[in-house]
Length: 192
Image (cartoon, rainbow, N blue to C red; front, side, top):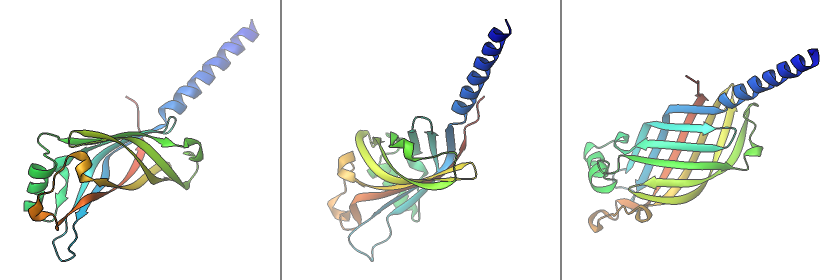
């Protein structure tokens, strides 16, 4: 009888440990940073660059799944006119309010989320932008530091791949591709 109780207690403790580990494997932020840079061919033309600091990111360290959501109208440009053109003419943020990325860290076993360190990674997933979904692969870095997970990456996207047309009149001002840089400090997602 005591053996059965001991076995039951052991199974219960193992079950609790597994649940705790799973709950702590999810990390989250609502303050990720995305920088958009589409500076054109002429160096003396105004900078076509914007920053968004309210991007959402969720990372499941157990599976390597990662998701980003970015509100397109939250990009802040130096020029309000440029911001208006970006939202109305290019990304059409009223029609396509969000851009998302859903992907997975390749070779997840090379990242130790419980040990401070810097881990180069490659992530593959689907980027949704301006009504178009395309598979992308990009390199990035995951840094584990005192219980926080810092993620960063950059990718270059061809605007025409996402049906974002650049009028001939401004072709020298705006690049055919945009450099997208992301960074975020993630914290453990606490359960309800």
